[in-house]
Length: 287
Length: 119
Image 1 (tube, each protein chain N blue to C red):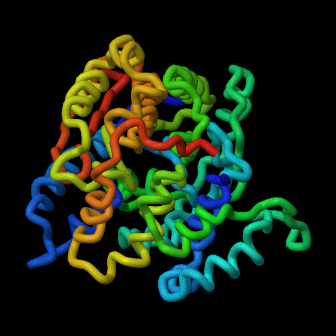
Image 2 (spheres, each protein chain N blue to C red):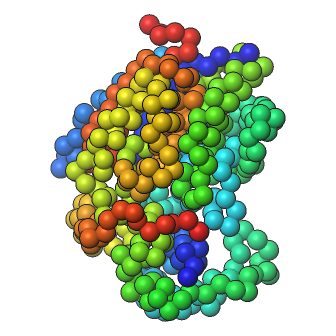
Image 3 (spheres, chains in turn green, purple):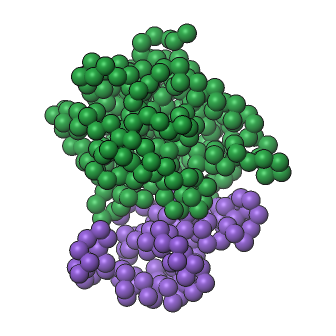
């Protein structure tokens, strides 16, 4: 059976590429520290020697739209083109093409349906920055095949937080039951407190530093009870109007396992939002 | 009131570079043209088929023509769509992050709960 080589949860910040490649007067003052933290975080994936990446993210109204909106969708295709004109325009993100791992997509779709997750699928999915940001930060050579899994954190009605956790647990089980000798890293990105298009956007910190502090603790400690006890679809409006993206972190807590502490935790207080990076090694801490 | 149709306008304009420029330079003409030609087109569907029932209210049309992001927010238009399109149209006229910060400041009188964005 396949091995889960690493479980990685991260924020995705579309400005990282621009900030980290800027030079001279264009380079923001926080870029050096940010880049150093990302490069250390990248090492946690490299060290796990993955062959395949399962990538959990959320489409930002690029291919998935309100006339036909899935809650959870698995991409199954030999290739996934990536990034869109408006992401190139706003964030300077490059066009990319990633290979797909169709056998694992098929395995997850079949077993997910049989585990009562009515997963949608796509045979022609162009992925966006929720998946390409972690490629850029964690695997910039973009050389590994992927299985993209999209969640709806964006267009209500949304699934309940506990459903994200349940799906995360199921993804872990499904990867572990994949008849393959490959090493799979499961990588998912979401947000801590975040406001977009509202009065609290683009502040000097994230809109709710207290939520961020608690969220980092929940994730680092695998504290699903604490997290599920405080987080609801309603409560997530308070820390910022885009904070439902935190449910992708909750999904990743489900993947990592109840009560399992992260082997690597880091964060960075940036303007606009707090960055946070977590890695678990299910085989035991790697040397 | 149709939050869905407001979102559809923002979404279809944002994804088309020519329409972004047209809406920036001629908001009234673009909104008129879009409502008569595009509002009822079903995306990703047979070209010859369309819906029959979608139109803006006067207030919605006015908010789009006036490019009034605060009113659009109040109507429950999806804030991500509005922000993305408005950055595309207006960030170029400002220094780094200046537009994004002013955009938020124009809404500083708003408090929780924000208008529901569910469609």
